[in-house]
Each structure stands twice: as C-alpha cells, then as structure tokens.
Amino acid sequence: DVQLQASGGGLVQAGGSLRLSCAGSGIVFDNRAIGWFRQAPGKEREGVSCIGSTAGSTYYQDSVKGRFTISRDNAKNTVYLQMNSLKSEDTAVYYCAADADGAWGGSPSLYCLTATLNTAQDHWGQGTQVTVSS
Image (cartoon, rainbow, N blue to C red; front, side, top):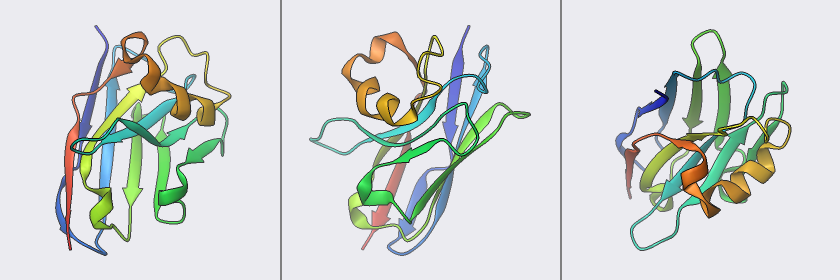
C-alpha cells in the first residue's frame, strides 16, 4: 500500500521559513518525479515545485523561484521543500505527489504542470497547512 506522509506545515510570519517533508512508504522515490502542489481557498490546485530522477532536475513555479528549494534524500525516501521569505500569498494546503509509473522522472516541469489534471492517476499525500501571517 503506497502512502505519502506530508509534514512540516504551520503558522509563520511573513518573511519566515518552513521546511516541508514528504516521506514515502510502499514506493521508491528515486526513479520518479515527486512534486509539491498547493491549494488555496477558492483556488485550483497548482504545481509549486517538482524534482526529477536526474540530479539537478527541478522545476519551480515563477512565484517561488529564489525562495523555495526542493531536494530529495533517496536513502530516507523523502523529498523536502525548504520555503524561505514566505509571503501571505503562499498560504495554502500543500500536498506532495509521486509520479505513479515513473513516466515523468526526466520531466519534472511537465509533471508539475500536468499532475493536477488527473489526480487519480498518481499517489498523493494528505496535505499540510501552511499559513503565513502578514
């Protein structure tokens, strides 16, 4: 049974930092794309950052470039999202997702842009709330 456990969310003031973790069980992370997505109230879920199976293969949404860093620890089967200089517009529920069949390992950008089109085909975590107060 595949499970993704997202954690690390919380309440932080604008300008602060949080680190989100996505730990996988029943699935091997290192040969597939893993992504962080977020959904704010009244808005559609969107791709924030994704990491591919190739070293250095990452994608960031324009609004988080230079502030967020995605990384993976294959030994721990965990992907992290370091979020710095947080803004009120970053407030959302953050979800991690794993490319179910490994098809997007070489294209994390495409994974980030298309995974929300059919969430049933991939593995999703339960979400962690990030609230940034201004």
